[in-house]
Length: 345
Image (cartoon, rainbow, N blue to C red):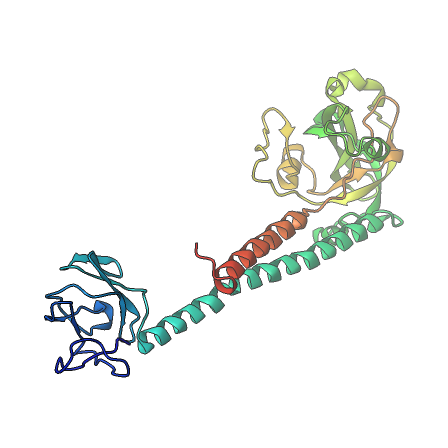
């Protein structure tokens, strides 16, 4: 409040104890002339500035705008030249505008808080998903060690036996081999020794899939005999391992494989298979779409190395956990900085 003479009568020197009204703020300079002073446009109080200089800085009404001598009129983002008068506005608001702004800030504050809360929830959910996936992988590994059972012919029953050991008896048809490549040999002892290394010393090669006539069931199935290095892919280089007698095999049931995004398409003409497509493979060699991985005990000298089953399931939950919790930490810090410490961006 600026105190003085509200009507301009009597002494024009400001007097203590008298409050000026918003529409009648007067002042006098050293020469006694009277002027109507500007006040903040945002508060819509006074509208014009004429006449004299002020004797000193003062505060206009309740908008807390300041008056200075000799300068410019500063109203929020608007600056205008006056005759020796400067009004500096400190961006104060009326009570109605303040309440509306506080309401908007409160709504924005609690709405943005949902982002770190949601990302924390998603990260926690991925923690539970990872635990479930690890238990599932462990259960499948245990299942692959159970006693073998006879191979059923019904497709529905076969699908229920994924990663389960089965027994078959019959003969191989080596003239129609298929090659899943490139593959590396499954060797648990070697993989344990090389754990943590950036590179592996193992050679790549192929898994040899051979049609197998089951004499006890009267059907032909596919058998993944095992791994051979690249120099042994040609059957003529491993003739000693091409057994022709009737054999009894124990293998693990495998289902068809879905092609991953960056996996090449199977090249049927070149007999190069990048993933297991049992329907297509069975159609090429005239067998049932049933495939088993022969166990390590089926290995013969000079032939493919059996036991090439990798019990793997897609498990990317750890990187999801790091992503969601990282976003939660970053957005929580930004929210705290903005609404609690009130540090401007």
